[in-house]
Length: 267
Image 1: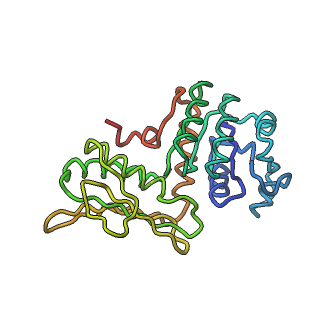
Image 2: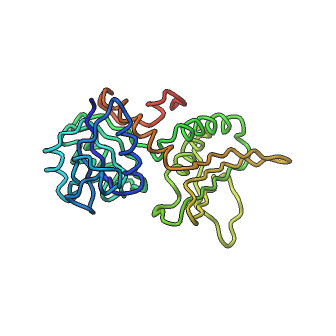
Image 3: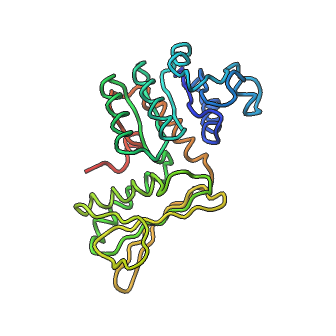
């Protein structure tokens, strides 16, 4: 059995990840980590029955990981917390699954350095959905064939999402830009803003939208819209658990969900 620790265990995504771990024949939950409900049984916190896994204090993550000895740590928290969790996990030679978004370049560098220095494997992606990663592949091909079209990205999420634009929207823009040899990314527009050879990115926040991403390719006399819509967070949780199985036997390095799925390879 692959032993799993979940950071952000008491959050919505953490709870869904745990539910998927419990359904898996390959995985075993050995640690639930959060800053709330410390000491309580995570099963009782989730109202699914006692699991005999107490919530460990995220502020004492080194000792929590030392006691539980997981093979893989899954993190769905916030950027500042995730950096500390990833570094702590890497230093204890634990492979990593990181679904947190909103990292600064400096935060990303800190995590990547810890992963490389400690020779562990990590899957870091803004979106674990299988559909989104197929979506990325379609975007790469569309960009290649529609290189002279205007490109706009519109994303929509619930009103509690902290970072904007979404990591998925940024990843989509990076994939398209790379295919086109490098394009300026413009985040929203106001005032006088004549369009240039750019990729526009726009964020909508409202209600309980799980996650919508639309990429618009607009040419003279026509347009193509490529869209992915997440109906529930289950798509992300299921993908994260699949990645945890994969990363447990991966060679040391930093991977994306595309590597896990064997689809759309970076060129």
